[in-house]
Image: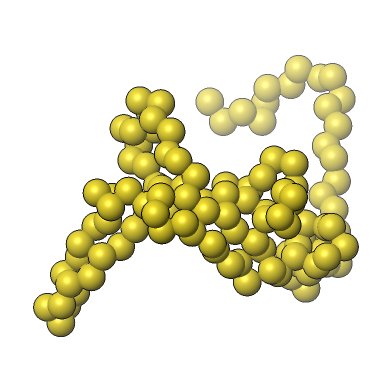
Length: 116
């Protein structure tokens, strides 16, 4: 589970998208993105930051979105490992699969196997 904490006073209201649903009612959406902290958890135990989502043109123009909040990944064990990686196991079909044998070139320049 990932929890978000957003400072609503920092939301750029012009980025709210009004959408009409199938039943005719309207609602507003805000697209956001989360970025993991490069150095792990911060002083407040946050795993990363939350920003407004930008369009490709805005990113290409070098526009920086302000930080509007933080997130915590509650699925990560407190032991400091990377969360899900220790829980992922390979599918049974791949567990006892033999490794492919390496083919060794014998140095011969025999092109007879080429069909053209």
